[in-house]
Image 1 (cartoon, rainbow, N blue to C red):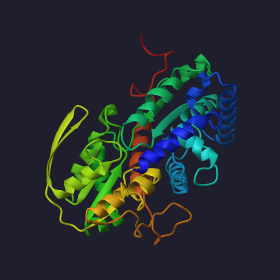
Image 2: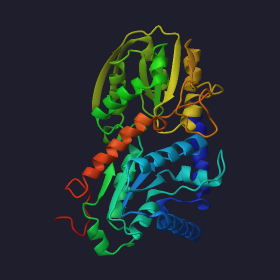
Image 3: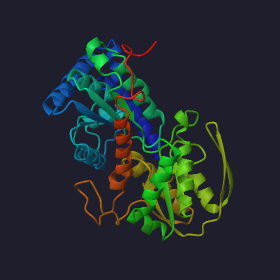
Image 4: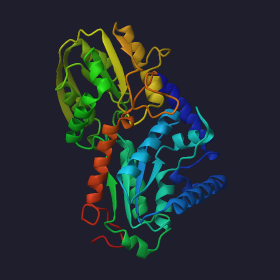
Length: 388
């Protein structure tokens, strides 16, 4: 599939990262150029924070990243919404993917644009003396990327890994740092998302005409962090309780590839083993002759445009569905919230989750829940004050 091509590109980007590096692990490298880049990028982020700081409270939104202009505008919309909804809080956006950071800086697909990893942002935030810090995940499930944000970037910051901050400052951060959870952190979140998606006008119109299939990312088989993959099955159950023509699959999760989704459309009994969770689902044969595909990801990037929608890739979801005799569309003209400045209502478009205002509201609800934890035992402790 196109995923394989993307991985090849990713490997090339990794190899060339000696020139374009923004990864937090680079401070351990002996390569002087890498270290120089790391320091230069830190100075840049420090400058951004120092020039924009207007509060002692900050929200750092962390996305995986992308190199598509449509995705960039979606991220801009997310930041704008956060600034509007969280008065008195400074808001910044970070990419957790070094490959996306490097390729965005190199100008892949569109004009070069600088993004920075959470380590650079958290260092700048600490040096600027923020007193309350919320790190909000823009991931969909509590999977590999969320684990890295929470258990590496934030933990290293709280441990003052690079010795950038005084003990007094770290002590002041005790119980004043929290992490906002992903979109589907709990099963109840999957149910809430199903309700929102089913009420979206374009999705409602599509499912009333035929099949609607969502393509999530998933974790690679064998790496089901925090049981995150089960959220896709729970979302599908919740959606199918509303309409039996909903289906959910993923790019990286065994038993929910496009071929498996097509098998489910054909009907039958299917057994799953996701992490430690077993599941059996029963599907009636769906005789619909039309289908609409949607990405179940925060932005529409490589996976949406290539793995899902590419008509020239015989293994894309679009091709596989059409080859199965189902007249399938991956783009639509019925979406009215298009973020990308080059698109207007009526043009063909692939709408992602973070482009939907009511889905963004779900993420922001998680941020509000995180803020409520500040100053309580549910917030993060620093080693200088943690109990023995």
